[in-house]
Image 1 (cartoon, chains in turn brown, blue):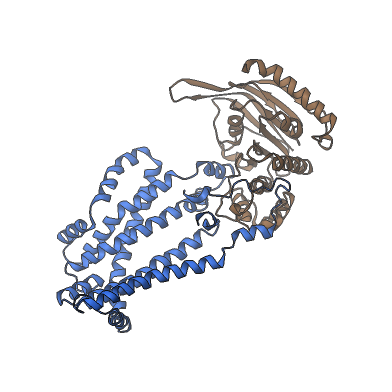
Image 2 (cartoon, helix red, strand yellow):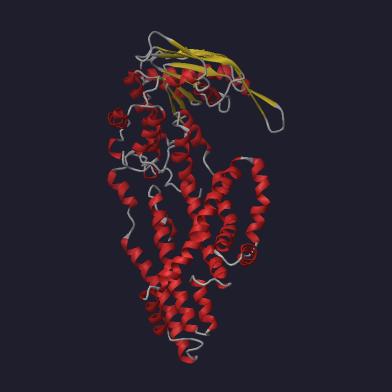
Length: 271
Length: 289
């Protein structure tokens, strides 16, 4: 369906005192097709900057971001570099779920989705079936006429997820979407997101600093070092989606393995 | 933005996360009817107290100084019935309306540019802040000296005196716009038009409404002063005529008739406008008390 390749990505910011701060230091990895790739790293290491660069919100100093898309719209495979920078990449659809829901609070739930439909030029006769399908998937079918501020935090994040999915993106980008929810809401939403992505065969990138979340959500886990970010390890999750139960020994075992790897590779640098 | 973030945060029920039912959501939305009734009763009592004090005063002073409230209100009724109010108020409203249109058309772009471009902010800040301190009476005098006694001077005086106020509101509102929502709309390829209409204007609208409210309060004061200077119609002219014939009853009757129209515009029209553009916001009543 779609793959994302990031090649030797460099990015620096100039701090307020004038000093240059390197954030991305030659990051290279390939996301998995039809699965969730977790970008796991310490807070503030530059994972979100990279995700924003992939979304076209941020420009890299050097490096390449390539999308290989073989959807029905394209014959064969098309390769794009950074989207939004070139007009032809407007055909590439990227869904984005933010840390905060980032909803238009003055629009109803359905209005938040149709806002994205209009932007992404979804044909008008598809709006209704898509509203039903994706709001149904996230469990908000009966709330489509509601305004976001009348919904709970978890429900608002679900609206954000539905908005990103409903444009039927080649790649779904998620930037710590569960980190501001309480533990139980987050746990439930993680499970639902995992199931929905598996059901839709969605290619997705998920940025997180939470090892357990990476072990649970990631089909592939890309481990970032502390700033400036480099890739220190890439590993594939040995457990299929259906076998990832947070309370099962097998999952707990993998989580420990992952935690040990993270501690060994980036723990010392932190200390 | 003031109350955008006043969301009932972390409402999630820990046991049944995301378990808000449709019923509880609508219940949160409804306003208790009794509280509204008490509120209206208190407001009415306040008005009646004022009229009562006036009536008591009228017992101790001659009618030339404090006329009887009942007679004054009869005069108000006569002004309304004879259609005079419609004509004079029409003239005053037209002046305020035109001036407002001018001020809005100027202040929206200036305010938006001040909120987005640092250089424009630095350039416009001194005149805006200075303009705010100039009394409306001075603008009225200047406008009449410059344009003479005609409609232009009324438009100019009112427009110039409310312009700084409107500009400041829109300037501050623009600075408060959520940049993250603009990123969001870029991700979903929203067009420039959609960004303005769906993302920016809804955030500005409450600031614009507040500006209109303050601006109107100021505009009425200035327009009446301009009319007093020698216009031959408008509410201000009628008040001055009452003054010249030393008819306290006429002065008060015109003032009251004017107030009635104002109350209708400010609470009725603008209040309705405000409610209809903020339907999406949960009412704050619950915590105000």
